[in-house]
Image (cartoon, rainbow, N blue to C red; front, side, top):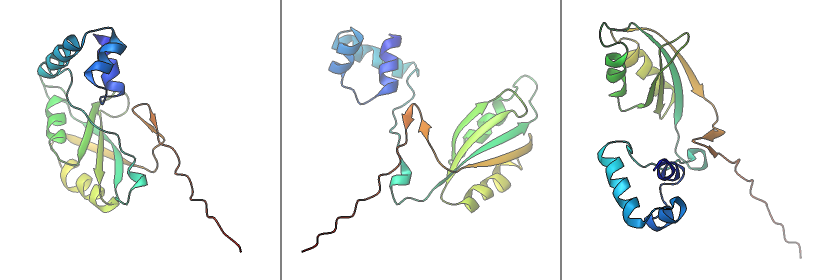
Length: 159
């Protein structure tokens, strides 16, 4: 069944028939396995990866290093839960090293991201420090390479 999960992670648009053919399972087994994975929250959702730089949507993504004071009996879980409740937050990871949490957020402008950090994140009771890094360009995400947009070739016709 790990094969099925890997196939879904690579391309969740595959049909049950395609997944069955590629995994060696029947379509009924694929459907039942997917239902079970969703019910047990092994599969949390399905999402398209969009290259927003190829659209007219303006957005800014930031990686924020967060230092926190862990809580007795709860460690970092309580503060992580408080942080991931915000709509701006895309991801939160517990880290090893010189900081505790990595928070990935998106906003429409640099100012919007800065306001989130200054007004919502940094003032949290257990947060002792932050460092914000703005993502300037994405090259690869979830094993997908963001191709450079081809320049439009101009054609000149001379008569």
